Length: 422
Figure (cartoon, rainbow, N blue to C red):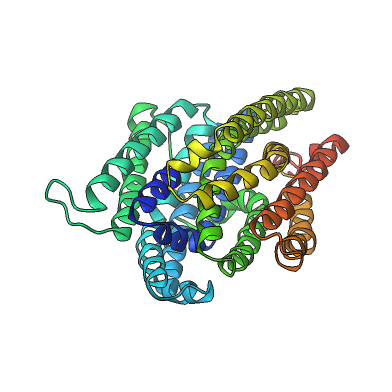
């Protein structure tokens, strides 16, 4: 919801502001990929320990999740803060668009470590089955973000008018407050033990199973982000209308993606719990149930968005060229989002069972040697523009979703769990 709110407030400044920030979002997405992978690996390992009734190591696993989050979070914050201007130049942004992108990235990037800690807290609550607290934390984050955007964008109620930078500050503040809320729930509300292992041997012992899942698993989302950076650079050459349409369309599609991410989180925890207890048939049933719910939901989301596409794009802009291009993009994305649903749900199940290496290798291969060439052929060489870019990525999502599902049916994931490896 924070990204969607930011996109709307950016569009209140101008389509150029939305386009410039949209151009560097895939780079900022690198952090999201790292944090979400740690979330999946950490909550997966913790859930397997709960399923195996290994509560002795559980509290130390939670502590290591926090340590890994702060370590990676600080590294990413420095990376974005000092690299903001460089990345804006790399994306081919010029003049005012370059300045807005640099300001947004340096401000948002500097607070990235708070997002990492928020993911860590969410992983702890999710592994305990307390996902409703994550929902309340997200709701709080969204309300704070929207309220601060409103007062900071053009200076209301005595607040300074900060424009693009104000939108970034609103997001960072919302992340921090959301984390503190989740931490309070963990330590005082649910009284979940979080034991920080301060000695290197204990840290290494607890971090090893998490990193064994996360290290190969992060290859796929990072590959997605890097290929998106290249694709966005292609879109920059197509002009401001195509670039603005891309960010508005993606933020509309983000509602369907969030829905699938929520379902995948539930499936992941269930599968990890059953795998930890050696209950593989129940893990399979949990996956199939989640996959059905996700696909039906995506069909409903996408059908609705296509039917009212003009009204949805009018929320962001009154430029009818963007409306028309956006409507075409949504129609192409219909099939792609069904493929993405399968990719997200089955991928999460495979990672939580410990079988992350296989899908990462295939994901990397598909994105770099199939998706990227297809987007260039359709978008640039054939002259289809943004529609061609989306066609290439949609085909990629469908192929990867099918590959992941076939891997699941092979049952090779059954000997990849934490306790199967011990």
